[in-house]
Length: 616
Ligand code: TYD
Image 1 (cartoon, rainbow, N blue to C red):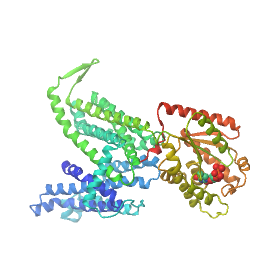
Image 2 (image 1 turned 90 degrees about the vertical axis):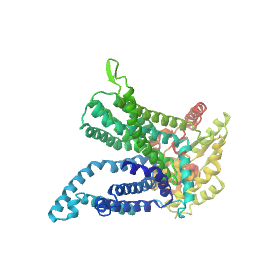
Image 3 (image 1 turned 180 degrees about the horizontal axis):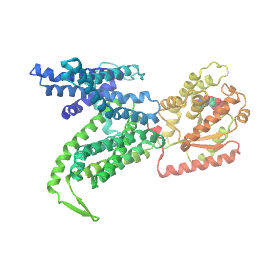
Image 4 (image 1 turned 120 degrees about the horizontal axis):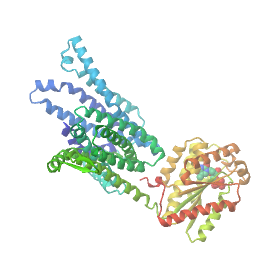
């Protein structure tokens, strides 16, 4: 049965990925749900059919249905996984979303066990009461009908979901193109220097998990003498751990970087498994098994969120599918190899040895656990190294991107001039620019934006015009300058839009950030200098008011609050400057900070390049 479920994975999974990427994901999911519901409905009748039509052996039929169910799941799963980033705007919430998916998938297992039991009883009762032969013969019938109905409900729910329309070409699937896309997906996975270590990491981790799954029950019952009841205890211990990990991964990812959480929990899981394989009492074994569960529960949603976050929407399905294959292969491979390994080691085992006055029986199962644990540990190290390598990757050339933000008349222009002198005098190439209007096209957009005659401009049109100006600015001016190694000093950038349009106009910080992220290809500044200054005084300084300046002092007070909020939330890339101090005092603080950043850049090029800049 296991073979029937795993076999198709290897053949069908990559194709399923292409389907998820090329076809309307919603249709794929609805079709798979309906087909799975229908197949499940046939299960109770397999035996009857087999009895009446001799060539249809019930076992063979079960194999076929099982394989078909698996294939449908294989097509459904990448479509589902790839849809999450379309529905969750902010990558910060990906981990939460994947945790929820996993909780929905696994936490309901115990519940379904109970429901199945109850329904079987109910069905028996119905059979007796009505004298129905169908129910009497198949006590599972009602449970299967309910199960099938859940797929119908799922299909219905999926239909109501609002998803982003598919950006890919919609021409019919042709085999040659499929093969090419398949090759593209696999090549991407194994050649991309950022993704490859993650795939290796996931493979290693699941090989370890496969060893654990196949050997841990025997370890508890045979080596630690836990008897047959220990299997239930193990499931409970690991299950509780997993659940805890799933629940905690989302909140944790808000405070720590996902890649750091991922690699450290994978390493911790490896260590816990090695200890698990070394202990000699049932209680401590269960404790460490539970700990393995906690770490696995953390790692899964984080790893998933990480990979999805790094992928463009057109490759997500294929990469998810390829990862599914890697996971299944690793688990099945380990489950097949581990028992053989245990046998070989047991034959060669020297028997109990004494370490630190402790007698440890070197049994094959222990060695298998150690190897599994070490595999996971190694996987953790590979991914940690990948993080290190990525951190040291220069972002775009070796330039530096500095932005000045603040309300009207807060003194940005003066500070920018002072900083320009400072860095030019130290021999650096400098490009000073501004938004809106840093390019020829941008200047036309600026006229539209600031002309007091355009009173009727809608907030959204305004936000999009600022974003359009920025997209042009990055492509034409900022990115080439950075690639050329220049220090780019920009008067206003994305944070202006987040403060003015996102927070004060109320269009939403996440939405505005997402538009600018798209428009700029994810280029965020290395440092934002915020000139914080009383709004009414700034407006007095500003001179003849343009369309935005005409908004009144209350509007500009809220702009100031919005900036302060942003600076608090992103303290690592913001420096707040007191605009009421003398320009020289403020400039001294700015220059000192830039000096430090330049020194750090000399030591390690582009260390700490903002994560957003690395989105593919
Ligand atoms: P500008 O004269 O350049 O202002 P300042 O001299 O204060 O920098 O005009 C830019 C105006 O546009 C300013 O009022 C702020 C506003 N603005 C936004 O509302 N959103 C944005 O994304 C940007 C870049 C500017």
